[in-house]
Amino acid sequence: MLRDYFPNTNKGAELYGGFLHHENCFCRIFDLKGSLNESLLEINNFLEENGYPPSLLEEFNETYNYEYGPVSISPHGYQEQFVVFIKRDVVAKSQMDFLTNELIKFRDERDWNQFHNAKDLSIAISIEANELLELFLWKSPEDVNEEKIKEELADVFTYSLLLSEKLNFNIEEIILEKINRNAKKYPIDKSKGNAKKYNEL
Image (cartoon, rainbow, N blue to C red; front, side, top):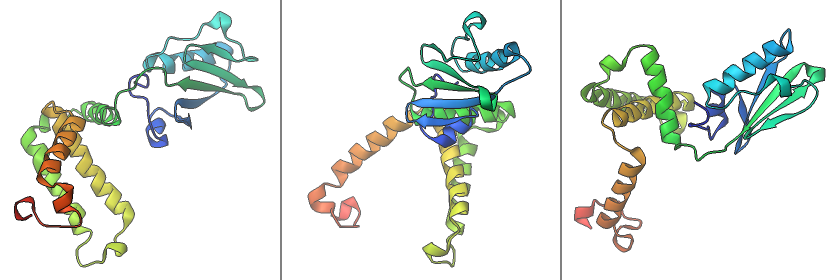
């Protein structure tokens, strides 16, 4: 839902059929339907699905801007379109939460949750990490296809997010905790520019 998981990138905005007008404003274009009522119905369905109250027909007009709260609707008469702008009006959940939510939606629509136990998700992470490694086998790093790296890296992240969700881990918290532990193991004065393991410093 857009109101809870406001995207931070255009890739994220594309999931809602739009794009970012700027960092804190989502934009989606709707074509004018056969009647104003039909156009409003399509726009309102989108707004309600994404946690925003619908616009009111008696205040809706195809000749002037309609604004309420974070939502504004601007007609483009010569293009027979309406442009819906939505400002980020709440503290959106983290990008990790946004991505996890999209993955869960994708998973549950296909009834795959039954296969996603902690063991199999852990195995999947290892398999995908090895497929990432395989891309580099017998090649110099600059010869590897970047698009394939993206695909395999996305798979590693996907299963990592799903495993964290399965175990109710907060990814941001566990990463920050690990950074703090590593900072103690690798003090700057001993480890800067040094690749040795902490017990060899």
